[in-house]
Image 1: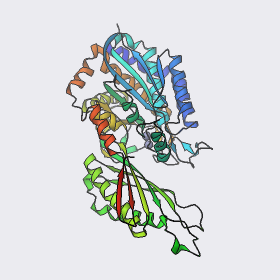
Image 2 (image 1 turned 180 degrees about the vertical axis):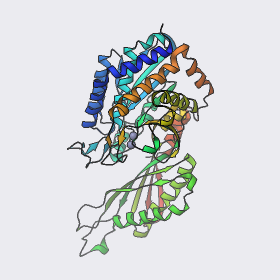
Image 3 (image 1 turned 180 degrees about the horizontal axis):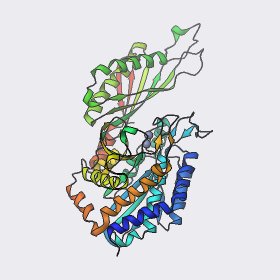
Image 4 (image 1 turned 135 degrees about the vertical axis):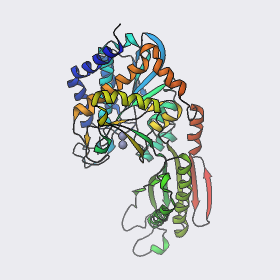
Length: 452
Ligand SMILES: [Zn+2]
Ligand SMILES: [Zn+2]
């Protein structure tokens, strides 16, 4: 049997040999973006690639997820290597889908390219002979928490339990056989160097809000109507008035959008809809800020005598990477790029559902360079294919080998030292408790609480 160092070298060579195929996957997904829970073509590409590598796999998990497995020669723990299938909607992005406006402005196409490259290299190098455990290759849906009305409708029809990909996969039991999880996000920030781990990320809850007023002629009889847009406008101002009360260390982010602002300009708006996240560094901070946001939302309805329906939905948990997995990632990244190209960054204020995974098992969510432009912006591009597609393929595969070689000593050691923040059951109970629908009547100043 080859030594671990030789195997790791063989993996890097295998990735380089597969360069053209890996780049083609990344470019093809970039050119064919699909929003979360609708990534059917991307999932098909993943399934076809698994097929061509002889990897047994399941499809249609949480609608579009694809899960393959590389079984090691000997039994042992299971490491999941993951990539996210979904795009965003940035309609003025040059590579946006002309019909849907979807665009890969977060680099998830590179995640899938890297994941497929890691899989190819593990297969080509014959790594399974050296593994004491299994490697799950998991293409997961819907990391971006978007199109909330659409997803809430799927939830009401019983097609989804949660509105994000990884929470849904956890709920459906697709992580039950996974012991450790790793994925690599792409970044375009020079201060993050070529490879970075972060201290933590904000978690979030998500809100879908509907103001109901009364339609009337906007010119001749506005006094007979109830203007739902004005109610929403006051609520937004009231949310902004809370900002000075948010503590710096809680890194609260509340960023509402209006998804429906009225129907016709000569009719007093009677149906106005908002969406917002309430993000923060800890779950407690999020829930405290959420109380203030709810007060602000009611205030708008109260002033105008409108009705407001506040749907509060579980979002994502704050990310807490396993420190030992971070160290292992950095060791391999330093081997690939040198220590000066790797960094440990502080808290980030975005959110990811890898946070949910990190609550129930050792997980790591580093990022690697290769992109340029503003994340989630119309100028976000893959600027360096080698860095964005091939380097993560190597880093993922090398980490998996380190974890599972030598009878999975490293994986077992990390699992033994890891204290999960929640059990799966506690996690699901926590998230399920967040579902709430409140109807506040501004005429009577009374609220009714219903389940979402
Ligand atoms: Zn994103
Ligand atoms: Zn992303």
